[in-house]
Each structure stands twice: as structure tokens, then as C-alpha cells.
Image 1 (cartoon, helix red, strand yellow):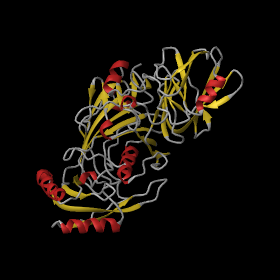
Image 2: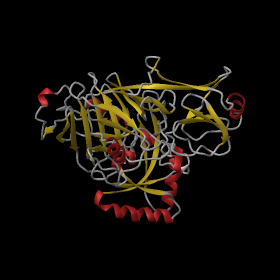
Image 3: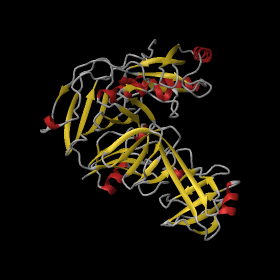
Image 4: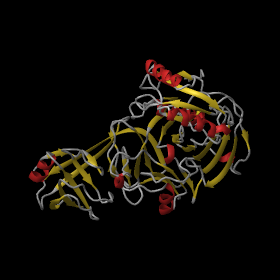
Length: 489
């Protein structure tokens, strides 16, 4: 096998056929493109369109065909499916000793805006057509019995050349026609996860898509916590990962930028201290602010200062209790508890000052009730050009940059219209998903001049009305941390 990545070969001009158009298409200022489908080797895609509401159209896009099959990937000692050349050759020797013929495959992970390209090596055994997955599984079992760690790999997931197929859903919202608004939702609480369908139903939204990444590395009951900035109705509910991409929603406008958040507690005696986080599990010696939206108890093993809506300290307590409605809690452990014990006495006033700073303009956002923020996973397009900020956004691995996954994508056009897209993946023979470069090219094709990748994989979900219109890769809709909602007028 000699398949390699082609870093510059993703934008291929092809024809596109149109199966339906909304009756008022001529009035649109944002239109679905009619040519130059950017993915694969010149498929001829089809699209159908449904008018959801005034200014909102839903497109179903199908393209390509299944020609990829299965191979076996032999894992490296690290547990990864790739490694350096000498490691791969050593693993290949083990495969030969087990009586099979391996192939050492060179793979080039393309460069991104903030990380150079990377060459790695994979050890592959055999090739089976799509219909013969069971034969591949049987061969994998034989190698496992010989002591090797092996997985059955669908070649469409590699991120290398493919013919597809692709299955995408695209919602295009015309800024000059749409009269509703955009909002973020974390469901019934920050700590708990909830499906997009549930959040759409609760808010009576027209459209909803899953939001940013959530923390899967914390206690199970707290895994709804967003990884990055979250603002709902002008209230900061999760601090930013400094510099990470985000989407700022205000009324019916959407802007992609990078954010920084600053939270400071100021005692009535003038003492100030940095608040390390908002609505998340604390690390050692941290001061964390919990709001009533947290939906869980504060951690045990620390000190809580309970503060009312006017900033008055109602009292100090041992931590491990709920956050009552109308209150906030400053939770401190270790060295951070010293400040609380010395400057947050009962009946004193502690002012919480919150800033959310737009790093492109260097100005703070006004935390008004119509302001919402959802953290993105990776920046894809900036000022009309591909600019993938995978390293800055914490996703610069081969798995994230090169391999194909289901994707939830958000973009804005030159005139301020909003594009929401899901590309299904991990469905051999039905849809291969997209890697970061393909996702960026797809959004540019749709007309986005700014675009980001939201959470994907099994989290990818688009709900229109009361229906999940894409096909989540888990086989059912996954509960997620937050959602972006399109609300009616």
C-alpha cells in the first residue's frame, strides 16, 4: 500500500446537480453553491432543499461512492496506530514472525497554520472489500492470538485519498431575511449533559446543533462542563481557554473570534484575588466560582463563601453543598482558602468582576442579556482563507488533523449570514466524514469567510424542528455539554 496524503489536493472542481429549490430562492442573499464541490475525486453530488422558516433553508447533500475497504492496522508499543519508522519496522518484523506479510506505510500529516507537517509510519496487513469485514475480523483475531495488538481499520477513515461517500446537512440562515435570534444553551445545568433535541424542545428553537467540547476527564456527574468559554444570556458560565476559537452570538448576529476571560473577586477591604475558574472541578490551591446554573454540589474538602445577588457574603460553610437559587459560591481549597477566610467574612461584601475580552479587537464584550458565547474546537477559515489553528486550540494530533470524523461546523459569510453544517462519518459505505483540511474547504465552498469546527464524532447532531436530521455515529443522539440554538422571531 502506498497511499499518501495530498496536502494541496483537496479542492477539486466538479459539477453539482440541483434537485429542488425554495420558491423564493431569487430573494436570497445567501445561496447554496452550484459548482466546485471540494471533496474527493470529482463526485457529482445531489442536494435537496427544505425551507425551514423565513430566511432558513436546510440542504441535504449526498456525494461520492464507496470504494474503500478494510485493512488491519497493527498498533505500536505506545498503543497508537502510528509511530516513527524504526518503531514501525520493528512491529512489522513481529508481524512477519507471526506468519503474515506486513506493509510499512508512510503517512504525511499535512501542515496547519500553527504546526508543520509530520511524517509517521503505520503497519498494515491485508486488504478486504467493504462487504468482507468479517474476513478482516477473522484475520485480526489470528494476529491477536499471536500476541499483537490489532484493529480493523476502514480505509475511508484514514484521511488519505477517498471517493467518499459523504452525507452532509447544511442550514443556511440569510442575515437579510431571518428575523429570529441565536442563543446558547447548556440545558438544565452546566454539570449535566443533555441532548440537542432536549434543548431545542425546551427553547422551542427552529434549529439546534451541538456546541463545543465538554470535559470527559472529570467526574462522570460533571461531564457537561464546557471546555472553553460559555456565556448564556450575558452570564459567564465557563471560563475561556485563552486564545481558543469561539463564536459570539448577539441577537441575530454571529461572530467568530478568540477570547480571554478574567474573573476577579474584590473584598470590601480592597483586597483582590484572581478567580481561577467558573463552574468546574478545582485543582489544588484554586478559587472557583460556582453559579446557580452549576446543577451539582460544590466539591468537598474546601471552604465555601456563599454570596447573594447583591454581593453580600451570607456565610461561610464547609464545602460539598448545592448552590441555592439567587446565590453564587466562591469555593476555595488549599492556599486559596486563606484569602476566603481572611477577606470574605460573613456580612462583608465581595464583588465579582467578570470580563470577556475579544482578542481580535482587544475590547471586552458587553455582558448584556442577548449575548451568548459557545467555544469552538478549532479555527478553520479566517478572512476567506484556510487557517487551521489546531495546535493553539489543542487538537494538533494526527488523529484530529488527518483522520476523518463526523464534524459539526459553523461559518459566517461576508454579509453576516450564518452557516451550520454536519458531515456524518464513521459509517462505512454511507459517509466517511472529514478531516480538518476537508472541513475547511467544505465551509469555504459554502461561502464562509470565517469558520470553526465545533465538537464532532459521536456528538455531531443537527436538529430541525423536532427531528434529528443527520445520522449520529453512535447510532443514537448523544447527550452533550451545550448547543447553539436558532430561535424564532
